[in-house]
Image (cartoon, rainbow, N blue to C red):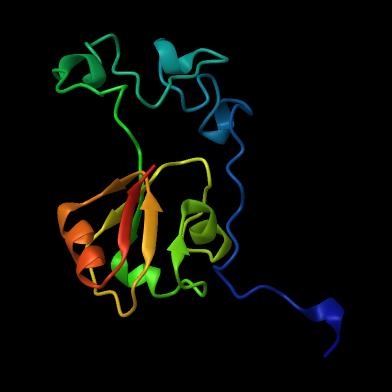
Length: 146
């Protein structure tokens, strides 16, 4: 046995279909493209979303709702996240960013009331939920709205 005698298993390799190579090949003349029509022409390309001139789906479906361009985006911080902050005492967006609780200094921060505070903290943020404000003040801390 040597490398020169290796062969593929019978039936595992199929010959490539040679298109447009004369009438005797079985796929000559129109080369499997049929007669006339858009797809028979050279260079024909039809976009996947094209529906043959029928009114396209994105124009048939009615528009709904609107986007409020004045909506304020907040970074959400829960009370349970404030326990991760190493510095006790005064907590501001800068301190939250340094400790990795928020990802961006420039987007306003809103504190929500999920979780409990274990120590008194003075929390300054751009917005607070009612439950967060209540829990912070109950634990002996202060709420400062920026």
